[in-house]
Image (cartoon, rainbow, N blue to C red):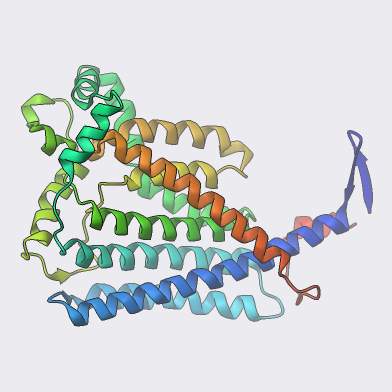
Length: 342
């Protein structure tokens, strides 16, 4: 059935075809994500075998078993003639995000043990060359309790937003965006881990010699976690990988800044969250230097990497979409799409 609205023609068959195309494309992107996860898992296993690191098995067995179950159920659902994309897309998204976080972060521990020369002086010089003064920004925020109350919860929302997105996107029918989001998340975390290994830094508080007395109203807990964990990895004290106790090691680029951009982009297709998500994550960006002890250049680099990865992933999706076969296997689509043909 074809309808006319506002001078534009809407073909329900075309809409249904586009929806089927997005479902098929999401499956291809999810398959690519599984390949990336498999490569990271192999690299992690080889790294453990070739270094002095060892694995505390309980956490990894639990997580691999749980995500493996999600993946198996999702695969069975997707390959059945009555597969529901809301079911398998949710299971795939959840399983893949968990695996990416745990495996890439674990690999980052081993990479950080290379203990390359610290680069804090260089990054501080970049900030100053840009005319950006962290000490002045810190003082400005520290003297405004109301601003702190706005910045703190947004900065600490990184995992809450992630949990919401991995469920909300597929359940709302945005299968391609869900698969693209996982791919972007994986690629940016890998890129950040590689760069952070080559350009290791503890943080701007350390570089400037700032003490808690210099910011009595602010407790940068994530920065303190990095300050505690990174030296132990670099000096050889930490050589046990426990999936349940992995800490933050990444400073440059800022992964908080990356996720702020990714989250705002991922929420874009949802009209009732688009504006709120953009504004919320803009505040996350403003809070990142303070909460994570990041140089301003960390945030700038993170934003640049996020946008570049989104662009590349979208182009890849378009390329894979053009390569889809003309005869697609039957795919169950949401009921609202079927109803549009009546």
